Length: 394
Ligand code: FAS
Ligand code: PHB
Image 1 (cartoon, rainbow, N blue to C red):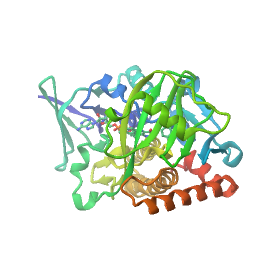
Image 2: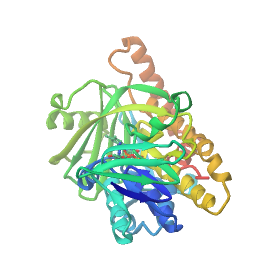
Image 3: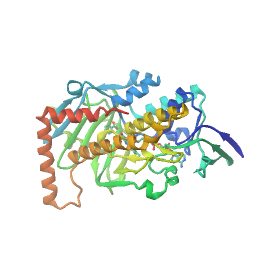
């Protein structure tokens, strides 16, 4: 039996877990990260693409922003589109802030490399990870068949939506609140330069489409599909046809290229009712998930980690107040993010195929009306700009 003791045991080496490790390391607080997948598997996940200004600021404060400053694409706004009309929301003019397009895989690689340089304890390929808190928080697991016990003062679940840590919180207190959406996203990576300067979010009678990117050479694109659709039903040609149709505006052309990655992601909102129970704490997807329309998943994880990292540092200094209020503060911010993600999703997606035809038509036309209102209202655009670039983290 390998026995270890640390101050903070972090379960999960995704962006939340590794970023929390960096925040703790910067404050001299001992920690260890336990991850049940391999390092390569964690790094292989293609997920988020946009960093809020708030997230860039957190990474910068830890000296972890060199990669995103070198290769990130700073965007001063987004395009919204309906009925072949595209309009720009100018974040810089409206709220003086920007976002940075920098894929989650790059963020992950930067966090991993920085932990390697620190010599941090990040344990991959851990099996049967079992946290327990019977007064002495401990995480039990095996690596290569060898049993391990990691005793800690705190256990932080950074283990995502299907993680194990939340099982330590009594169900009546965890009490997740959820919404299923009658749509899913089919996302592709394509080796072709983006056909747009900034992201395009488009509402079309056939469904939502988005043009994002990963670099000047790689495009990231999405189309709305039915929740139960399978990848086999979507050939590359069908994907490009749908994107051409849904993103079309007169005089503009979408460049095609080889699709190198294709996946369908269900859309769901879920928020637990507490992120803290005794010495057990949750951050990121372990506590909440959002539909990706508002680009908030990864950014919400960063916000939780910034709040919890500061609270654990203050607790180490003898002041428990920030830790005592962490869950309330993080959840209060998260519900603002949930409503933004929900509103962007409802605004830009057509109702699912099971919706009666006349209701589907009414809801589509009312969305067109809302987009027309937004295109002509500085106030409506300022609200979107303020939320898309990131609310304050406090
Ligand atoms: P993560 O899920 O990233 O990381 C959790 C880690 O814990 C994983 O490495 C997992 O292997 C590990 N783990 C789980 N159970 C464990 C156990 N029992 N023991 C040990 N380790 C365990 N967000 C956006 O903003 N835009 C997007 O386009 C977008 N697309 C997405 C597509 C998909 C398919 C998914 C699933 C999510 C997407 N997201 C997107 C959201 C995503 O980016 C998350 O918000 C982000 O990964 C959150 O980071 P973490 O909280 O660290 O959780
Ligand atoms: C992405 O580039 O993957 C991306 C961008 C914005 C979103 C969702 C995904 O809202």
